[in-house]
Length: 148
Image 1 (spheres, rainbow, N blue to C red):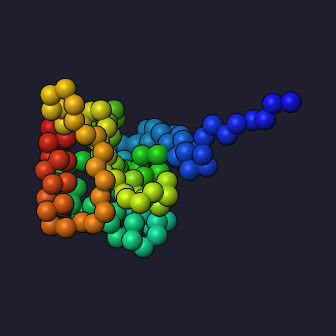
Image 2: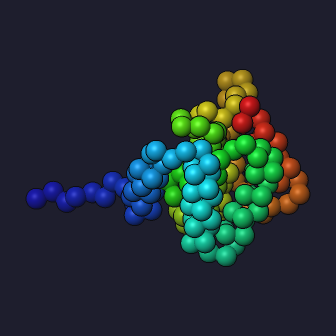
């Protein structure tokens, strides 16, 4: 009898389940409710993180929200994220804490609807070890560009 191979890690399975819950919860929200619920979801996601990841996520929230206040806070596969406004709002960027997948660095990532195109090749995720003023400035500039 063949052994069953585990296709998805526990973290990946949890992320897919979180995405399904997020889509279901978002159905039928008006824009004001979407923003309020999204912010609550984002804060709940941060609250579950280890202290160092939470601190970075909270600071990133300040940087991203300050750079483009029109982006709607939310979660994306259980991770803090930011989307365009409206019923069909598209996720533009997200924060993936290092603890989520047990890696040595966190990332700030951008989705396909982000306007970061630069020739034939460009990065869509950036490893972040520490938030310095220079790193925060770079993230703010990328978010502004990504939001169009």
